Image (tube, rainbow, N blue to C red; front, side, top):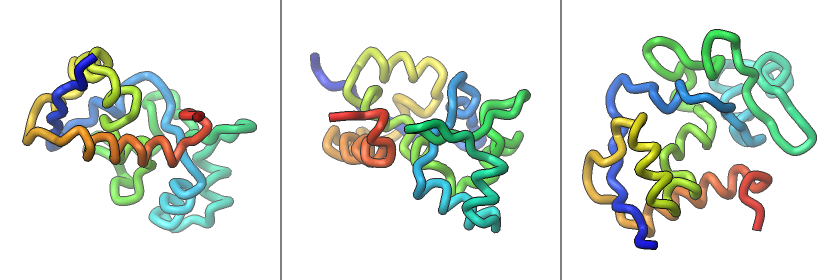
Length: 139
């Protein structure tokens, strides 16, 4: 299958990726970065915002929204946002699959806009996601 044509430019004011059903997974590095940004110790930050299982960590989901840091204007921790958020839509499962890239474009208005992104650059961005969450991308 031919690789998808990769064009993407985040659209000002858009939070459509943040409104999708699911969870915001966080790495240990994500926790440290976000805790520092909100001026909490990593332990206090985790106690307040992180749900941990044996092999995964994710933000606790408030009842009224998908992420505790999503506000009407956007991400309240944008400079320290998790890798999952920072790399979207350059996730391996989207970059490596034309149908998934196109499906994501149905809700993400930035897909298909902007300069053509070389597949090598898109794969490098996807690799950042893979490295941050190895439990989700084994092998």
